[in-house]
Length: 132
Image: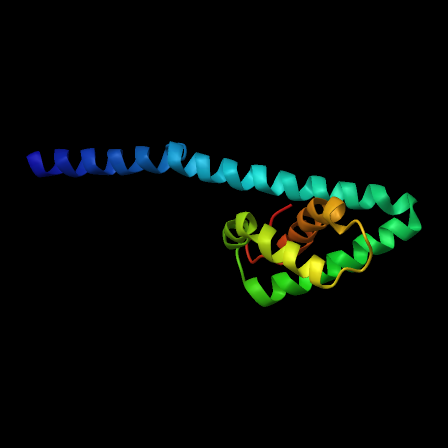
């Protein structure tokens, strides 16, 4: 009978563990990913808000395509949101170099954050674990 009691206790513990909310570490990782995705969404909104100025919007779209090409080369076609988010903090340097090298028009530094965030937002939609 003692074996049955232990088995039952183990089953109860496993059942309770399965119903527990994520650990604080898992929650922090999820929160960090969600915060990063919000930054990307805000960049996308800024990009779309610029559509009223046809010339400025065209510049943004051209720069967006450059950054998307850079993401394809660096991240690849198969990736998760976590992998994309891990690349985000290190992207400033290569995006800055890319936009400076291919300067389509003066003023790219002022547009860089919008282009960077909008590109990550758009690219995130191709993640294997994407969810809106």
